[in-house]
Amino acid sequence: MAKYILWHNPRCSKSRDGLKFLEGLDVEVRKYINKPPSCEELKDVLKKLGMKPSELVRKKEKLFKELGLNNANEDTILKAMCEHPKLIERPILIKGEKAILGRPVDRFKELVDEKS
Image 1 (tube, one colour):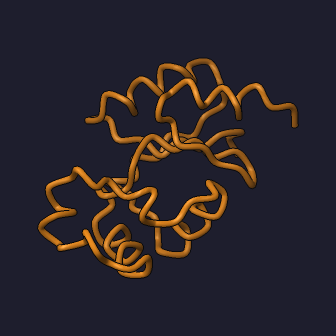
Image 2: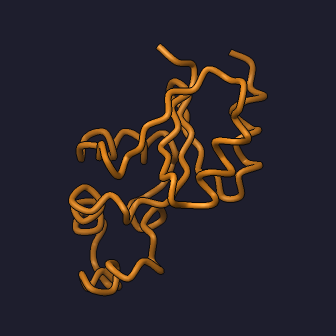
C-alpha cells in the first residue's frame, strides 16, 4: 500500500502542481472524478481534514449554484459532493489518519515532512 493517497483531478492546475510536488514519493494517485469516493469515504476524509462539507465544497463551481447549495445544510452539501465529485475541492493528500487540502500546494509539506 502506498504511503500517500492523492485525490487528483488532472484537469486542475492546482492538482497537477500537487502531483508534481509529490514527485519521487510513494503516492497512489486517485482520479476521484473517474472513481468517486462513497459518502462514507468522503465523511472519513472530511474527519481527517477536520473540515465540514461546506468548507470542502467548490463554491465557485457552476454546478454549486445550479444545485442551489448556497444555503444548504451540511448533509445536503455532502450528498451533492458524493453525487457530483467535481464539487470536491482538490487536491487532497491523505496519509494514514491525516489529510490535508493542498491549497496552496505547499501545505502538503506538513504531511510529507511529518515523521511516522
